[in-house]
Amino acid sequence: MKPASVPRREICCPHCDAPATSSKQLRLSDTAIELTYACSNPACGFRFIGVACAVRTLSLPAVFRPEGALPLDPALTRDELIKALQDSSVVRTAVRPPP
View (cartoon, rainbow, N blue to C red):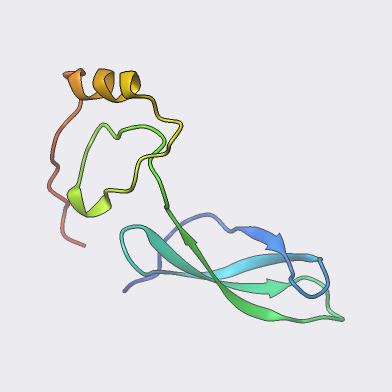
């Protein structure tokens, strides 16, 4: 798949706790990207791969695609779901444009 264009991310290096910045990103699926990280500490120099993925739904989307569906967060109340489903502005299905 082609690289995803998302902002650079920073996490702590698992070896020295210095900031590690993502330099390359690859879209793995509709809900996951692979990130290549490099430690900013020259004495460490650790490079590694991380994964960022969407894991649960906090609010229903205005445009729904079945392939992007995620489990609902337990904090999402029944009333919030009913209100969102009854909202006339919610588009039930969207056609994804070709890549």
